[in-house]
Image (cartoon, rainbow, N blue to C red; front, side):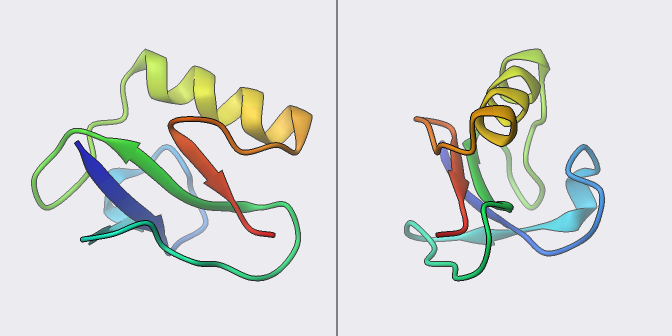
Length: 70
C-alpha cells in the first residue's frame, strides 16, 4: 500500500490521483489531500477506501487511509 495525492476534482476517479513515495504534505482547508491504498499507477478505490473518504470529509479529521489538508 502507498499514498496517492489527490490532484483532481473527483475523489472517486482513480485518474485524479498521483502516486507518492511518502506521506504528502498539503496546505489549505479540510479538503482531501491523499489516500493510502493498494494500486500501481492509479489507486484501487474500493468500498473500504470510499467509507474512509466519507468519514474523513464528514468529520473533517484525517484517518488511517485518508489524509486531509491542514
